[in-house]
Image (cartoon, rainbow, N blue to C red; front, side, top):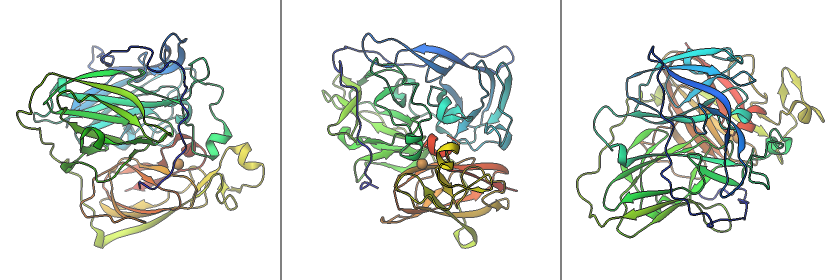
Amino acid sequence: MNDMKFNRRDFLKTGLGAAAISAMPGFLSISYAKDGFIEIRAMESEQKLYLGDVPASTLWTYNGSAPGPEIRVKQGERVKVRFINELKEPSSIHWHGIRIANAMDGVSGLTQDPVQPGETFEYDFVVPDAGTYWYHAHNKSWNQVGRGLYGPLIVEEVYPTFDEEHDLTLVIDDWRLNQSGQLDEASFGMPMDWSHGGRLGNWLTINGQSMPEFELNAGEAYRLRLINVSNARILELDPNRFDAKILAYDGQPVEKPEMLSYEPFLLGSAQRVDLLVVPKEGRNFSLEELSGQEPFPYANFKVVGSGKMTGQVPVLKPNSIPKPNLGKASHHKLRMTGGAMGQLDNIFYKGKRLEGRDFVETRQFWAFNGIANLPADPFFAAEHNETIIVEIINDTAFAHAMHVHGHHFQILEREGSIVEEGQPWKDTFLIGPEQAVKIAFVADNPGKWLIHCHMLEHAASGMTTWFTVA
Ligand code: C2O
Ligand code: CU
C-alpha cells in the first residue's frame, strides 16, 4: 500500500503559525429530550474554518457545529436519536460501522425514505460493538457531508479502559476553502472532481478547529481516536514519528497493539484508527499530513510534566464478530471501471449505455460490473449466515475507499502484498489503482445493504451497489 501515489496537497499559504491557538477542542454535549431521545437537528450554521481573522462559512451541521455532538454510549446499549431536519432538502442519518438493524441504517432510498424538510425520524438501535464510529448524512452525501453533516459516535467498552482525560476523539476533515478562507461552495459537484479523485480540499481541521493544540501528560497512556470524515482525502500519516501503536482499525481492536512496520499510514475517507500514545517528557509532537512536498502539521500535542510510565496500558478486548468459513463460501466479483484515464466504454446507467456527452450530463463516470449507480437487482443475495468472499478488481487509475454496510470483513488477499492470517476487522478498506483485493465476511445481518466507494463523489457518480441478506 505504501507505493500508492496521491495528489499533492495545495494548502493555502497565508498566515500559518501566526495565530497562537491553544485550545482543547471539545464537542457540543448531547441533549436528551424528556422521553430519553437524543435530539439531532440538521441545520445551517456559521463556522470559521480557517485561521486568523477570516469570515465564517455557512455550513450544514448537526446541532450547530461540524462535527456535531459526540454521541457516547456503552456497548450493548440502546441508542435513541430523534433526527429533526431543518434543512431545505431531504436527509437521513447513517451510523457508519455499526452492525445495525437494517431499518435503522439510514440510507435514503434503500432502507428508509429521506426525511423531508421540517420532518423528523426516530432512530432506535443497539450498538453491539465497542469502538470508534461516526454518523453522517446519507442523502447526496457528497454535498451534505461535504458541508459538515457528520459527528463522532463512540461506543465505550463495558469494562474500564482509558478514562475521559486519556481518551481523545479527533475528527479530521479536509475542506476546500476559497481565497478568503471560506468554504468554496461554487465547486461542489464539479464534474472534474467526480471523474477524478473526488473533492479534495486545501485545509484540514480537527474537531472543526484549525491547528488545535492538546496538552498531554508525560508517561500516561492515551487513546487517540482518529476519524477521517473527508469527502475524498486519503490522509497520509506516520504514527511512528511519535511512537504510537495501533489499538484499533475502524473501531475493532487489534490483537496486540503494535507499531506499524511501514509508512506512511493511509487513512482513507470514513476510516478510523485508534492510536496508543505514551508521551515522553519534553517530546512534543504533531499530527502531520505527509502527502505534500513537506510534512504539514495540523494538530500539535504539547507534553507536560516529567512522569515516567506508570500503571498499565488498558487492554481492549475484541468484539465478537462471526468468523468467515472460507471452505464454504460463496464467491462474487466486483470489477471497478471508469473515471478519468479509465475505461468508459461499457457503462450502463438506468438501463441505458452511456456514450459521449451522457457521462457529463448524467454525471456518471464510474461503474461496478458495468453498471453505474444502484442497479435494480442486488449485486448478490446471501443466505443468512453465509460466508461471502468478494474479489474487488480495481480497473481504474485511482485509489478507492470501499465500504460495506452492516458488516465487518477481513482482507484475505491483496495483490502485490503478503497478507498474513488474522487480519483486523474493517468496514472500509483502501484499494490501490489497478489492484485486486479479496475480502470475506459472514452475512449475518438481514436486509438490504450498500457497498460503495466512500469517496463521496465516486459513490454519487456510479460506485454504489447493494446486496441482500435473507
Ligand atoms: Cu459512511 Cu454508505 O456510508
Ligand atoms: Cu472511489
